[in-house]
Image 1: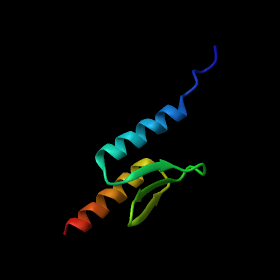
Image 2: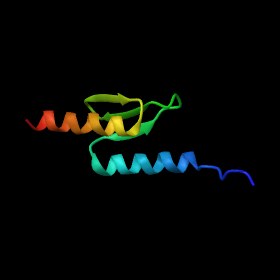
Image 3: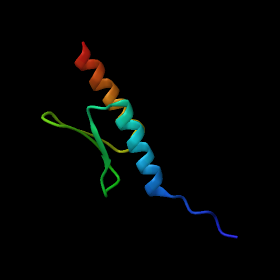
Length: 67
């Protein structure tokens, strides 16, 4: 028996949804290169190599913006 295949697109969609729920002012996506991007209309973008790194950057940005 072979190994079960992982539904990567479903996993990415789930991670995008979680990030957009936590950071509703941001549009989250994963580029074809694998890099994650958060776009805030009329502001700009934040980039990261993976979803946890993007979450950390968004939290830091929100904390800095609040102070």
